[in-house]
Every structure is written in structure tokens, then in C-alpha cells.
Amino acid sequence: MHDPSSLSPSASHPGAAVAPASPLSSASTRGSTTGDWTCPFCPLLCDDISIDLQGDDSLAAPNTDCPRLTHSIARFGAADATCPPTIDGAATDQESALARAAEILSRARRPLFGGLATDVAGARALYELAARCGAIVDHLHGDALAASTLALQDRGSFFTTLSEVRSRADLLVVFGCEPSRRYPRFYERALGGIERSVSLSFLACEVDPAAHALPTASVESVLEDADPFDVLAQWSALLDGRAIGNDALSVLADRVAAARYTVFVYEPSALPGPHAALLIEALNRIVKAVNRTTRAGSLALTGDDGALTVNQAVTWLSGFPLRTHVSMTAPLDHDPYRYRTATLLEHVEADALLWVASFGPEPLPSALSDDVPAIVLGHPALAESLGTRTAPTVFIPVATPGIDSGGHLFRVDATVVAPLRAARNVALPTVASIAEALGKRSQR
Image 1 (cartoon, rainbow, N blue to C red):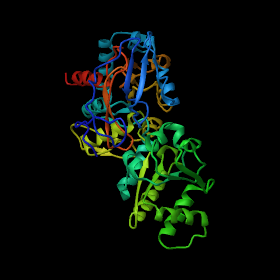
Image 2 (image 1 turned 90 degrees about the vertical axis):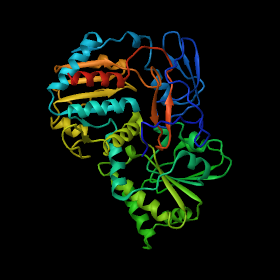
Image 3 (image 1 turned 45 degrees about the horizontal axis):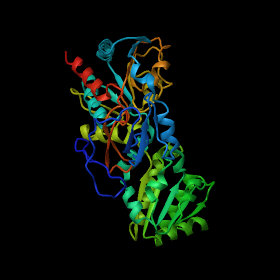
């Protein structure tokens, strides 16, 4: 785990020499282009992008073929600069919104800090505020995070990095997922431009069509329609020396044993629930067994919307991962099941919700009762969806890291903390500044 207070810049490509970061507060003027810009909308954190700022504060990235980036930047425009805070759907000023939000938090006995789509600075400030309020902290992608964390706690893991994949891997076993669906530039960032031959075996899933674009790669699907639990159970039995009667899996296991460096790629959010942690644990056991005779590692494609960043920050500050009840006066309590956002809201076990969605207009959870007060620190486009609530609701539009402000995010492999530069000059407050302002009010 890395200390989020010790931040290092990223490089243009995984494994490249580290270069000094540009000032995080710099932003483009209208009609300009920012080169080597880091995209904050995916944990790959691609930092080779040229982004254009239009005259109406909208953005375009014409030289980058990434549908996820195109979709994300289409949400920003001229209206963002004039989006006001609201109280119960009525426009107000920031001081009034802060005062009402502080009042909601002061009355709450068991607040929940959810969403938590923010960067390192936002996570650190929110953690301090949560400790003052005695809040529970969980992320928008808490289910995927919890599955990975549980498997790591139980058995440990051999993880790898994008740099290792690029420089060493000769076999990738992609388990139960289609990486390019959520991470369109995965193959380009992990394997693009290499000259050696690489084999990709898609296990318990179809071949990802995007993999065919790799000129030096051979691609196959193994047991495409098989149950993922059965596949890993049979592989584990095979490694224990037991006959399994599955020729295709035996052939793949032999190829792994003969490879110089195998990488097992999976997406926690794509694994079937509610027992995804068992699959990840089985994968980790297989990777450890392979390492007895050769080299192998796993790469989890996860961490969207700052999930990995916030989990790293909270773990560093508290000693526990997300889904923890934090406090300045009582012992901390971590429970990945009890403190799940959906569970708390469905059972009405939280009496206030602070919802953070700075990367996009992520709506309030459907399980949130209409009589539970809410404070929303979010993308300006979220304002339209909050006016119909009957409970006290405060909305404060905030900056998106990498769009309206600088910041830092952890990359998907948790080895690089990438600095973000603002792409435009829209004056929106950061999540960190709002959390700090609420923290000061809680001290009064």
C-alpha cells in the first residue's frame, strides 16, 4: 500500500522514466489544446491525450479513440460555470448550502458517506470529516472493492503491474471478462507496440474482439460457456495432481507452466455475485501455485471513479479499508457486509447520506428512502435530478479532478499516483475544499 500523502508523478508509458509533473493548478484557456493530459475517467489513467477546450467550455479529444472518454467529456459545457448550489431544489449561495449541510450532519447519529468518487485530496478531507461525524464510509464501487479485499485478506496475492505486463508477459489468461468493454485502451496500454509474441487465452468467456488488434498476439477462447466456479475448482484440482477429465483446461495449464511470465487478468465487477470473492481467492491460489515452478501474477481491472484511490487513502489513514465506521472518539469498526451502502439504506440504518460524485452525474442510490436527508457534492448535471425529494437535500456542484482542478489518482495497478491537470478554467470548488469547510463548521 502506498502513502497517499507521498505522491509521485506518472510517466507517459508504464515503466518509462518519471518526469516532473506540470503544475496541478494550470488550466487551458478557451480555444486551446492541452497535450499529454491525463484522463481521470478510467483507472488506466492514460496520460498521452491531447484535449481541446472549446469556446463554450466544452471539451473534445479528437485524436484519441476512446468511447469512454468521449462519453465522459460530453457531460461538460457552458452551463457548469453558472450552476448554483441548491437547498431542497431552490437555488442558493454556497455559504447557505454549507450551513444547511453542516446542520444535517450535526443532527445525524449515523451518517453514511457514500459514492466517494473523488481524488486523493478529496478522500483525505472526507475521511477527517467522517471521523468528526462518526460516519460510515463506502464507495460507489464498494462491492468490487470488497470482493478483492476479502480475497487478499484471506489468502494474499501475487499482483503485477502494467509495466510488468508490457515488458515481460508472454501469456495472458483473461478470466470471465471483456476488458475493452469498460477499459477501451487496455490492450494498447498494456501490450501496444511490443515486438515479442504474446498469447491471450480467454477462459470461461468469449474472445474480446479488441484483442485481435494486437499484431503480435495469438488469441483463443477456452471453455467459453463453462461455469467459472467449476473451471477454477477443476484447475485447482489439476494443480493438486488430481485427474479432472478436461483436456482443454489441462492444455491451458501446461501452457501456463511452460510460459516465462503469465498474467491472469480479471474484472471484480464482472464476476458473478454474490460470491465473487471466492473466485478471486481461487485465482490467487492458482497464481501462487504456478509461482512454485515459474512466474505469474494477477491484474485486477478495477478502481473506477476513484475507488482504488479512496480505498488506498482510507486504509492508510485508518488501517482499515472502506466499509468502515470511523470516529474520533470510538474504536473503528470494519465490516464489508454490514456497512455496504445498499444494505444500510435498504434497512434504513443510516439517518443521513453525504453523496460524492465528482467524475460524473452518478444519481443517488435507488435504495435511499425519500425521508432521509442528503448532501450531494457532485457533477453540475446532478442538480436536475434532486428537486423531487421530500427530505432535506443540499446540492453543491464541485470540480471534477482533471477537468476543473488538479489532483492525484492511483492507477489500476496501484503502483503509480498520477498527477492531474485541469483542462479548463471553470471556477468550481473541489471536494476537498467543501469537506474542509464542513469540518470547520463541525468544530464550532
